[in-house]
Image (cartoon, rainbow, N blue to C red; front, side, top):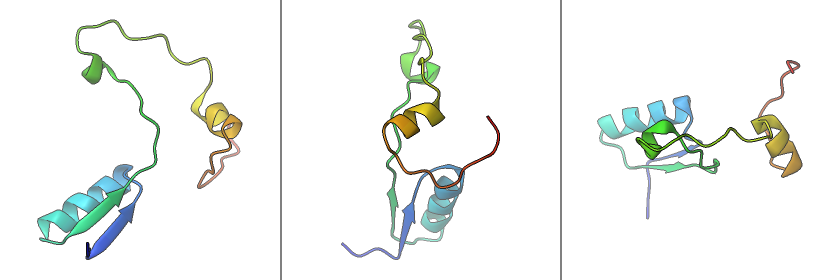
Length: 74
């Protein structure tokens, strides 16, 4: 398939870029490699699960996932 644009990462900027491209009638491909996170919207009236024991930063480090930027904040 041919695309006029490829957006890698569907965070806020990627999602915004994708919707703008679609609004302009462009054929765009959005690629995301993120982890699935359960939210209250998905669960509906069910009880939210306990939060993970690892922070996202710790999980990514332990799983050897590359990060795009690092912060000096804890």
